Amino acid sequence: MGLYKIEGVVLRRRNLGEADRLVTVLTRDRGKITVVARGARRPRSRLGGRLEPSTRMRALVAEGRTLDVISQVEVLEANAALRSDLERLGVASVVLELADRALADRHPHPDVYRLLRTALDLARGGPLAVVWPWFAARLLVLLGHRPSVARCLLCGQRLRDAAVWSTTLGGCLHPACRAHDPLAVAISSGARALLAFLLDARPAALGRVAPGPRDLASACEILRGYAEACWETRLQAPGVVERVIGAPGQTSSAAPHASGRRSERAAPVV
Image (cartoon, rainbow, N blue to C red; front, side, top):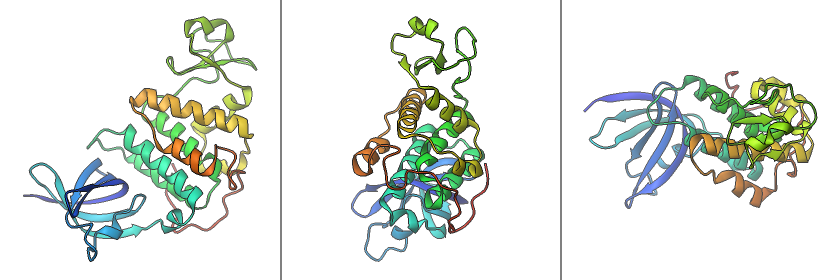
């Protein structure tokens, strides 16, 4: 039975049997893996508190017949600040779910790993309103699903004020081309400009954007629907966050400010 070391971020965990947990981790070098944490639910277990979602850790993993077993966990970033603030926890939960649903098992994505670290760092102390839509937009780009927002997907015309969004086709259409997708919906110029910004924005630029609540909510809904279509999944976290802390742009931390708050540790720039 072989051993290997990992560095990664815990995406989610779930119970297994009476005392164990299955833990899904996005690792730096091996991609997304799911491992067993033996006895992690026992009161005196040293593993339980070290495998919380969003925790970045280093660990030793033993290869198993069906599932590998994790041990000797060293916490690198606990991200406790996320779990003590409901809004920041909600944003982090959307980011973690997006990464989990988008990635296949054991396909290394070092660029996505860096993006995830950056997004969690921003969720701790950055411009909260745009963190998860930015992460979703950049994740779509990195995985080959960049939507077209500046020109019509079909006729190629540069889009002005009027445009519609097609989830099926993966981008915006000129109103004259709307008949090609009866399900296409109108998109405001503000929401389209926000999407264009998010697709290429670097983290340092996020504090300089102040989208209106309607444009932000529209962009979030479009990104959510497009991500679900691309990855053939149903995202749960965005809806839960909306029910608990309000729709995008309506939370107490919604107005983006320059991210000058001190974080636990600087994450790499993507």
